[in-house]
Image (cartoon, rainbow, N blue to C red; front, side, top):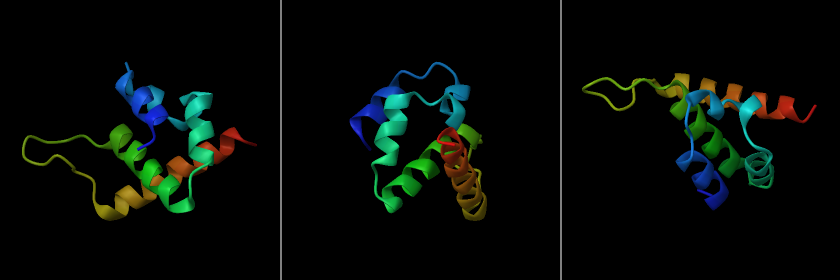
Length: 83
């Protein structure tokens, strides 16, 4: 993961900061310079952080299909920032 994104994640104080509309410009700048595969992976990671609620027995409670859908929606949210 890019150091700018790592720093952003390390300094989070609330989950709403992960929403695409709330991402800082430096994070967006890094994301738009990524390869498509790297960008989708990052969107997947951000979407899981934002939407996953772990249980006592399972660290990830989302299905693979849900993760893909959430990652796509996350990417759409980022694209809206540029319109």
